[in-house]
Length: 114
Length: 113
Image 1 (cartoon, rainbow over the protein chains, first blue to last red):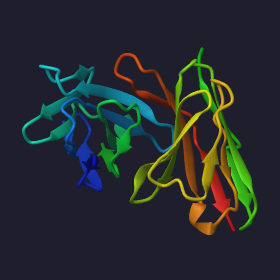
Image 2 (cartoon, chains in turn orange, brown; image 1 turned 120 degrees about the vertical axis):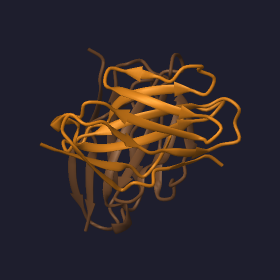
Image 3 (cartoon, each protein chain N blue to C red; image 1 turned 90 degrees about the vertical axis):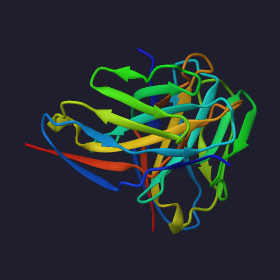
Image 4 (cartoon, helix red, strand yellow; image 1 turned 90 degrees about the horizontal axis):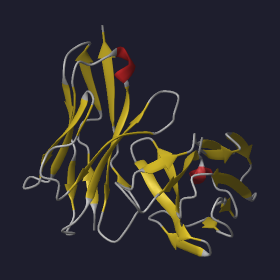
């Protein structure tokens, strides 16, 4: 069975600092995809970044990067130069081989303070 | 612009009543999903569909049903609402190409009294 674990219920970071949100996963599929979503207080789910299990390089999207360590089964999200608008819930998710459904972790609430 | 819309956005109902949450997408995606979001549980998959007339159960499907009669719509029905089904419900759709990320509706907050 596939599982996503986010062990940090909440994180604080000062504006302009970098922050890492942890995500570990468990799967027996040789091919899978990893995703991060942001959910601001308004409630919508915003796709941030994707990493394929066979991708050689870590994914980056602007200030977001995914620190993918396959052997450790971790897919941590790194946000550089945090902004007040980054305050939100962040969800890690995984898609296995031969399926298009996503399995989500329980989320990490990030609060950015001035 | 393509979008995915849910209705109603907020609903209060009583235990035992039937409730239907609508989901409509204009992305022309074959894949559609219903999740519920509860504190401490993240998003859990209720039902999903990979195309017209296809439906599949997710991890928390008891008490829910879906039907897919066209590409655009996947309504979620609670046959007999229970207080445990008080939650925020998200509909999502996605393509089978590219990364396969899901696009989410804005959510429907359901309260069962």
